[in-house]
Length: 353
Image (cartoon, rainbow, N blue to C red; front, side, top):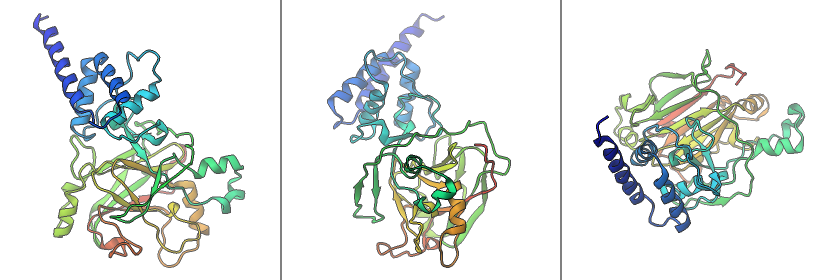
């Protein structure tokens, strides 16, 4: 072996540590910074490279996991995760219950801050009317209806109302094995610009899919490849960036992760009151995620929910950057939004998740 190789490796580690220290947020708490600096001192070159690439691309590159090896003596791994997220992403994180892992994260304790996203708590439609059919006791009802403690937000573009939620997190259901696929696909994606559908339906067979305008080494539905004739659609599409990730877990609940720099607006039949006759649109901020669909609940809603006009209990619609509906927007229908996505669920997809 060339005798210069160890020296080059040592120089590279010092260089990476210096750059990673400089990327720590200036307002990060002192305790979190000290813990992160200790980690950087014991990280190997591969761990430093992975962390630097994740931070440099803002999660655009699907970088690998960073397990806590060797672990810091006497420090809870959960506290290390919180410290990494505080130092590099969110100053207001206080517990891992405010976070959810991205579906491509494989390690039980991962120190890659871009393998996490903040959880937005939007309760699913009340199941009280279905309690007898579901045969759920009170404790099971509570675990089914609530999500991670975080926040709910209004759909006002300029004046977001943040409502703290005291809900405690239910057990997070793991995602199915990534190698598993469904013969018919569990959903299909349709990309629209106004009233015009662009391109063909995009069937999803794996357990998560990325939808993006630009994503380094991205795999999924690339909107940049879709030809736009409308100037407003072209302008909005360029802001989508890393876009969204859509994933299904073992409870057959579907999760939406906003990986872009702008908010997205979502309507789902399972995210509005069971007696509602109008569409309720939710705002999902950048770097947040939420549950947007439940196969079992949607099947019930399809048969019992009162509705007027066209209604589809097996689909979710989301608009990039531009909101619609209610008194806060001039657009009252999603078909007037410049760039939007329709997620069409296959009710007959494999039930053995």
